Image 1 (cartoon, rainbow, N blue to C red):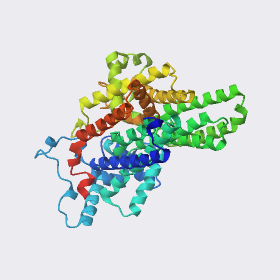
Image 2 (image 1 turned 90 degrees about the vertical axis):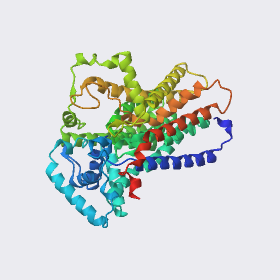
Image 3 (image 1 turned 60 degrees about the horizontal axis):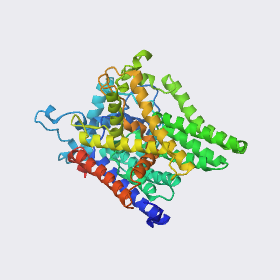
Length: 512
């Protein structure tokens, strides 16, 4: 696609509205299909949402609060962790709400009463310890307000839990627009980017989008920050309002998830380079107020949270108690270099797993990973090949892109590289003890959902690679068709992979 495709800006935005609707439907359909409280700490994140809705900020690792525990005990599905053969008749037991119950209200009260008894008995067990309590507050504050809104609208029981999960529908709709505006900042006249990025977001089979957790907020916050950082770079003399918005969005990315710190480091370097550019032009003094405002708007909220975690948890990140709980311990420096990631096979294992978990996820279903090996291999090979091709073209400083696009693409590349490097670093420095994943046998902390903050700049960089991979094909439909094939593969493989989930008696559809 290019500027000659005959799509005006109003028509383009109308198309994005339809893509936005498709994204919302996509996330709603799959979020409703998965039962609640998966093994990716969804119960812990749910507990934090309930706590924040009550105005209860945790201090240290704590047992899950009683209200959240009642929901977990009553509505959690055994299908994520157990096999059907674990049960006497070889089938998962039917959930109580799927049975014929004449008085649902009375049943719910009785079920919650029994759950309360179980909670009082078992709350001191490690199973009930919420080791995610030190997570930054932004997602849980927003989700807590959403939870209270659902209660005000009359939702209750499992319907209220799904109402909370459906908050991701709102987030993904916003993310589509953020992806559109980001692509328009970099490639304003190329529809392959301005429509391609929103479409990839809309149909990405990312399982984190179907769960109650703070990963979904990262690409929203940092994607918006990315847009304003680009505008900061383009401004001849940045204004204080631009600095304030950029700083607050960077603070929001930090308060969404700590794993966004590598992206913030890249952003800091980007801002410093802009200041050096202005200094060289002799205009830094005029722009200095904007950078001062940016600094304080970014640093003060982050510093306030770090101070709180120091008071409440004993260290600035709040991670020390969690690491002890999950039995991660730092390795001596001399042992870092024995890690298999420094071998060709180990490096491929890490990069390929990081790639397909970023596109898909790592949920388990009936005791097994909910992915297909062939699909994983396609994601890994295709994505890494396209990214390498994009990097090689960027290194040649192709004449078909201007200086600003060149800077923006480097920014996108370093966001992806910093996120991957951060997870590789964590894989190397820790002994994972008795933790099942990552483990001593498979010491790769390659969870793509942790670096979803880089989604928007990463997708622009990905499409840049695909764009130049097909640049010599003279047919103007080659790139749109290639993008259509990729999206069809994503949606088709997701349906095939997750089809079994739709039959679960524990999901939202069986409430209807």
